[in-house]
Image (cartoon, rainbow, N blue to C red):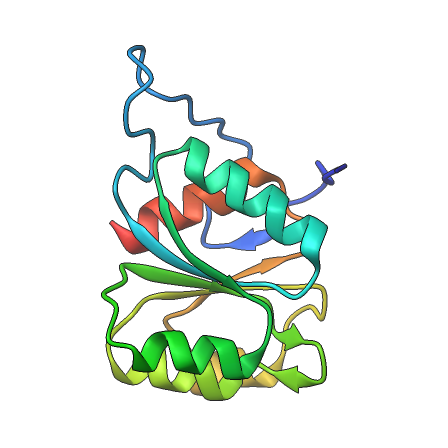
Length: 147
């Protein structure tokens, strides 16, 4: 998978920083954080899951549909944060994001749709990463928001 190295793709993220794992290979930047991943593109999902796990995260999901995401949230599983693709197939992720917001779960929107009115209006505390995003930028934002 090829990632852009252009301008800062994540609002509020430390751009261009590469976060290495500890010398002994333990934990990484996201050590033991439980992160819900909602992404309907299988190759993007697999790449993100691998990058996040390499930094020590425990991935919940990944979920590929709005219904799967809401079912996982409703199961009562504890989570430290969520990375949400805005467009999950034929549905927008905002109903899931509202549940997460109301439960105090930090959110990062990972989207190819660019900035949307909903972000500032309904989710002012959420991070936004516009695809394509460098993995280290997304990981940096996750570490800052979910820790």
